[in-house]
Image (cartoon, rainbow, N blue to C red; front, side, top):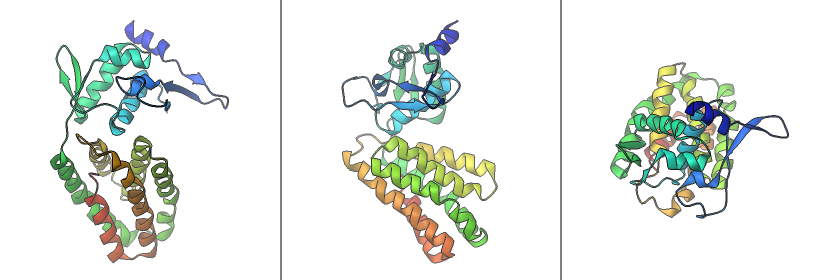
Amino acid sequence: MEQARAREDARPHLSPGGAEHSRVPEQARGEHPHDGPERPRTVQRHSVRGQILDALRSALVGGELTPGRVYSAPALGARFGVSATPVREAMQQLAVEGAVEVVPNRGFRVSERGPRELAELAEVRALIEVPVVLRLARTVPPADWCALRPLADATVVAAAGGDRAAYAESDRAFHRAVLALAGNEQLVAVADDLHRRSQWPPVNSPAGARADLPADAAEHSALLDALVAGDLVVVRSLVTRHLGGAGR
């Protein structure tokens, strides 16, 4: 019954264009509803759990859920306008991913991640992705690289907007598309999971971290240019540097 009420509470609304969507209220982005201007998020999953999971991931990436702080499912559910059940289910998934830790009888604590963990994630990503991209650089025709240009451009647009959550989505979409050219679905899934983990901000993340986004996005465009040109020396330099800074 609780899940049925949750589905009713989170029934999507029809936009003027007919697309289904629901807006996550400002309060869902943290414990303090008046910390800043409202920035509604649009979620388009059919399940309430999926909608809440997407919104929580965005809040984690954007630093709106504070590392080390405990959040209860009922409190977050009240802010999302749903019952505690889909929030608890989404938090359980985030616990599997390492984003939060279960605190018995209290809720979920946002994991505290330091520079070492981010550096380790960057190293593992580089071990996986660098050789794959170098192999693809030798075999994939220029037309296939050109087809990825809109994805690279999307990261530039997201970076210019300064929204780290929006940038995280476009960044992962670009990297998934590059690796998908290898034709190995397991590789894409593993790399995407590592990428997502590397995007969660560390404890005491500096306010100026958003300034890194345009530089990071520019590397996507430069990498595509080198791949289209077949310049393996530049490709190696760019992809190594780009993934070396993956913990930013």
